[in-house]
Length: 337
Image (cartoon, rainbow, N blue to C red; front, side, top):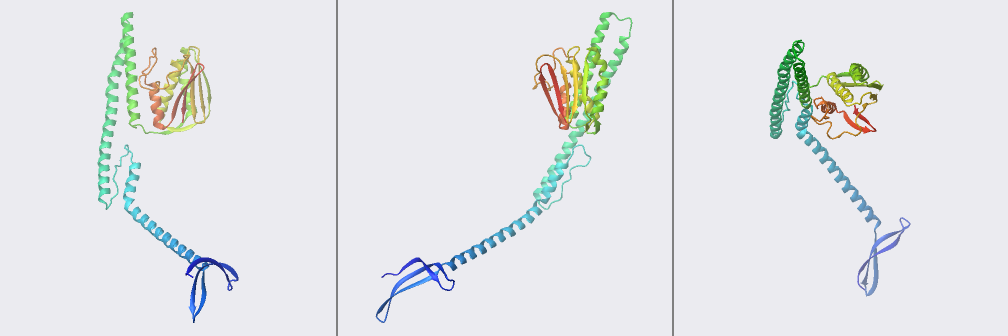
């Protein structure tokens, strides 16, 4: 009989239960007699030992990973702290502020070099910004002054009673062109200021009161086309530049009046975070992709073609949304604050 190993089940008298075991069976010869010997070892203890070893191994591994994670976290935090401080300062950097970017000292050469490069770049950007701001201010003054002088001279010349009808008509055309050039100049300068964020003076504004005042200001112009205002205004406060909001409303109202039908209606509604200005007009929709672009205007329009562009840029400056919609002869511009 050959020795063999096999799995078996035996009765454990100590535990008073059947248990799985591993047995070895063989024949031995003692004093000339053959005996079959079976030795059985419980596998219950082996299973328990494996479980204990597994738990200890996993516990040690988890502890080691925890120590490595905490160590790396503190080491990396210390290593990257100068970079995080530099990033925070970059996010807070405002080109219009007097304070310049300074950067935080670091023992890491790469971070020191990064701070120096950012500092030099911020100085160049600030220098360019100040030059642009000065140019805009100078251009506004230098271009408006001669236009104002020409306008004054034309006002005096128009009052000359010796002028013929033809001369008066020509002077009136020149006067109209000068006024248009003046408005165009102001609009382009304002666009430059908006695009370069040169206007920052914000204040609380009551839109309901401002819209009411604006409708009164346009009453006389409304009467020339026998137009009628209808309005539904709710209280609404915003934080913005009164100068810019005044320009935004002026352009929306002027657009609604200029492109309205005679004896038409303009409906002004302010509810929640929405301002809508609706007017009668041509019986087909405008091209929503072009009306907010520069110098887009109707063939008969006497405007500069920058009114709605200013509206769009002012809305973009404050994060407002401007939307155009046409339905059944009504043209609606909606501003979402």
